[in-house]
Image (cartoon, rainbow, N blue to C red; front, side, top):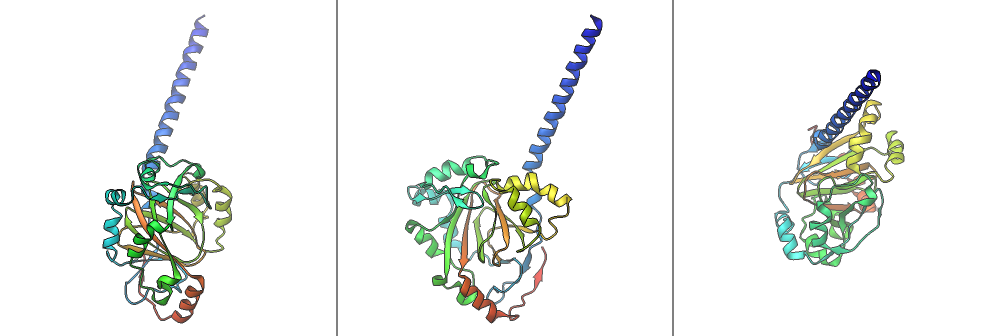
Length: 290
C-alpha cells in the first residue's frame, strides 16, 4: 500500500512538473510573440531625397520626404475618417497570398470590428483593407501627393489605393510590379527577398494560408538557423517615409500598430521600364544602411 501511495505521489509530482514546464513554455512563446524584436531590424538602404526618385534600382530603398501629405494624413485620422466616411462601403478581403474572399461592409463595421480582432494563424480567417479603388474613396486618392519620380508617376499611369490595417494584420509573402508605399499613420514592417532567391520556394510551400506575423513567429527562426534568409531585406516604415521596391521582389507585410493607414502607388510596367532605361546611372543618390 505504501508503494502504491508513493507511486501515486510521484506521478502527481511529475504531472505537476510537466504542467508547470508547459505553462512556462507557453508564457515564453507569448512573451516572444509580444516582442517587437523581429520588426526592429532594418537593412534596407536609405536614399537622399534629391531629384526625381529613381526606378531603375536593383534593390528596395526608403526615402524620407516629410509630411507632404499633411492634408490626407489629417483626413485619415481614425475618428475623422469614421465621422466623414463611416457609412461608406469598403472591401476587406482574406489576407492570404492572393486577394480573395472579398466582402463588402460599412467602413465603421470594419474599423470598429475587424480591425480590433486578434489576427488568426490561418490568414484566410482574417479580413484586411489593403487596396480601396471604389468611387467613394476617390477624394482621398486624389488628395494624395504622389512620390516625385518623374513622368512614370503621372496620375494617368499609376494606381493609387488606400489601405487600413489593425495590429499584426498584413499580407503574406507575394510579389507584383514596382510600387511605392507611404505610411500616414502607424507603422508597417516589410520583409523582402529578391527574385529567384532560393528561400522563395520554401516560403511558398509553407505559407498557403499562414499569416505573415505567424510566419515571423513560427517559420522564420528555422530558416534563419539554416542560413536560408541571408538575402532578406527588411525595415519598419514610419510616417513621413516612402518605400520603393522594384518589380517582382517577394515581400510580406505586417502592420505594427492598432491603427495603420497607408497609401500604395502601383506603377505602370511600361512606364517604369521606360523611366529605368532613361535613368540609367543618372540618379546615383547616396545610399546608406540604416
